[in-house]
Image (cartoon, rainbow, N blue to C red; front, side, top):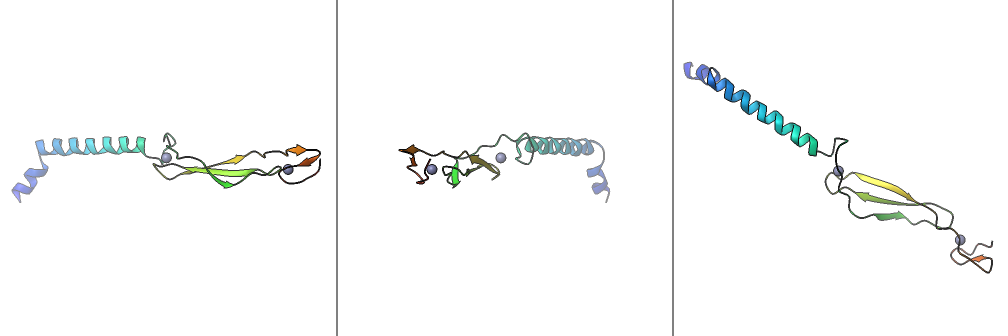
Length: 95
Ligand SMILES: [Zn+2]
Ligand SMILES: [Zn+2]
C-alpha cells in the first residue's frame, strides 16, 4: 500500500504530468494533420466524371481526398453546340 502511494507521489507525479503534457501535445499535432479540421490540406486524386456534360446541360465530376476520403464535387460547364451548316454535330439540334 505504501509503495502504491509512493508511485503516485513526489517526483513520479511530475513524470506523470510530463507524459500527460506530451500526450496532449501529440493530440494537438494529430489534430493539425487530421482531416476533420478546416486546416486540412487535402490530397485529392484525379477527377472522375460522374456525369458527362452535354451541349446544354452541366456535367458533374468528383475527386476524393486520399487522406480522409472527403469527396469534392464540381460541375462541368456545358460544352455548347457545335453547329455545322445550322445543325449541331453533337446532338443534332438545328440552330
Ligand atoms: Zn483530407
Ligand atoms: Zn448540341
